[in-house]
Image (cartoon, rainbow, N blue to C red; front, top):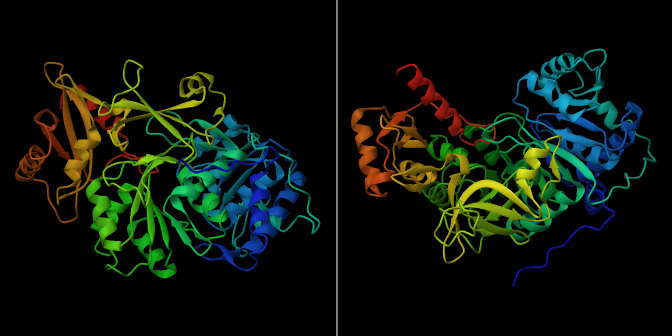
Length: 529
């Protein structure tokens, strides 16, 4: 029997809900970053004061603020403070060029920018390019000098009166925040979410799959500005009073190991490429050195061999799942009691899944179909993009763009993105199946497969691989990889050509950008290569 899913009341402010939920936790650490700690009592005080100070900057309810910050204890204060005041934070990727932020400022109509000192130059360049003299709020250390017109974040977070204004009287369906979809192709889309959506991801995946408890210490490699990271490091842990570790820099294997060993988190949130890199690293901590009880994976499907090896080494399962910016977090996942590596599991309680074949009909078990999902955490729309909103948000259903196969027992196995699927010898095949086969070989760290046209105009598979450290490319290895695949796959699925690269093109979330590999091959063909 499916569990009962709790829903928020009609009048609802997510920030105020979290603060009230944790009011008795006092000095317990809520956040620990590279330099500071923030208790639940301090989080409450700073959020409320920050919210009370926003009207003094001329910011009004429903107006947008660009949130361009590295992960640190100030990030949740800024995000929740905006929600508390009814102002809409637009959380953006910190790895983009200034021109992208200028475009986002114009697209969102943001009325202020909140940033970190290392990102100050990019924020200033974006403001200059936008031609809009907006308030610039900077999270900086006390001894760091700031531009004359900048507002110091710490001062603003302490500026509200002791009385502090009540939370904005928002509803569960009011716009709370935006995220820009990273995607694997195209221009980012402003994805608009509500106060209720944050609650629903915690009430579904958080409660029934992740199952955090107050004593947990969590650490997410995915940053707070991603939908995956926002749930991992804010919605889920704060909903149970857990402690959150934040890493400001890039989550390289070495940086992740340092946090895992120093702070001893119990729950870790990663992505497949990171797990593979950690396993391949000579700095991988010895078995038994960590105290993880659960890990999760998202962003791309987790190869079976990577999941099994990592889980066996650390003694904790990896719950692989799939979510999206549009659904805010994971809606199809493995669980402790329902785990099968090589699959993405089964629907998360509170969500419905359907697969649709190329004719728009329900896909039969064993048939590849496009995944559609229905649940109460779906975004409202893409801002000022009506055509894309209409083609993605299909009434109650959301069109994911992912291809899946369901077996007779209800397990879902990833087949690839809809625009990455290949038709070879008249049969559809999944690039992910071939990639997983290649990654099972001891020499391969990462793999990506695309379709290319041969001299007769027929589609053929081509693979790109990144080799593990110390292994050199050779014709002998090429044939060894093809022979290895022939023992695992049907003949038409074995790539005729395997190219070794130093790295694969990826989005900041770790998703492989296969379209860039296709562009590379088209350019080579045009040049006569």
